[in-house]
Length: 480
Image (tube, rainbow, N blue to C red; front, top):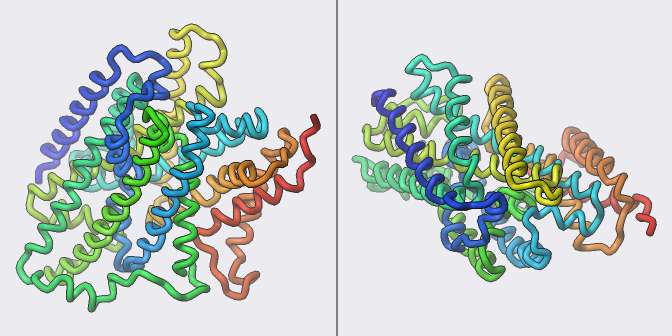
């Protein structure tokens, strides 16, 4: 397929998003950028959140990892589902009761100003790293198969894509993101379903289910307690990854808080969790089918699992499916970036600068907010180029490992706030939140030596949170 045609599709898709941004932002004030005026429809938010939660990592890394880890990722996904119900039952009622625009306002009310800014800072760090890893993965594929063939350097293609995202998010905010994510989720799922149907319809694939069962690729549960893939660890990790990366994440929660009532927001979260389980199972099935197709067709699989799906879609599948893959891929890219840019802008303006509380005229608020937005776009560019230089291994594992260290203090802060009545000295909280991940890293690095061969995996998030809570418990009590 012609790289020029594929590039034209990317720009055409961007124009559609720009049109949605223009339509949804008409007459919107500055507060609407952060809250969507609380007019979002719960079912639209639920569907759009699928694209945000899956992103390019799920689109490429989950199918690519099936050969090495089979369906083991489903263990984590089962934990995700439980975690979403915890978020719906515990955190959403809290946020709606306190009428929060930024969810870190809870930390201000519970602990104080320093803890509030510490929590927001950890979110900003976590979301910046997580979003740029996801964006890099998709840009790497676009460059490898499309833009690189046209002689466009990676840094330029990254800059152009980020510029496009800035153009349609700079004004609209949450209201725009809710609708663009919905469109992008639709295209992503179309690429997924279309590819699955194409493969099982190929000659010689009539017994695909029997072959997959015999291959061992459908194995889900790991019963080796010392392994980092042990099923209890994976499920438990999935629960707390969801609580941290969704329930304590401004990007994910700002969409839920843009729904008018608590009941609708809870309905959105619960329906979304069930759909997400089914979609992840489809991605795992796709991965198994891709490897089975490689065997049937005598194709040499790429060394990197993350390159399997794009290689087959753009070099071995028919042009219409390659086109559908590219549309699905950029549909995975944009939700990773647009929601993150909006949420990071919102958290910086609301939590660190306090634009809505300073009594500034709306024109000045808008000016500051737009400068912050552009600043994060530049930071994204720097991080993407860094990951391009550093690139190795599977992106999914990298993403979840980083999340364990950066979201751990947030999880510890909220857990301590909800489960205890103590109020540690506000000024010393940042010290605890920095030391906890450092100590967690040391324990994870030497876990096999310290704990009789036990290998720590994604549960570093829980250890990190527990150390944060322990540190808060021993801090001097805030004087009245």
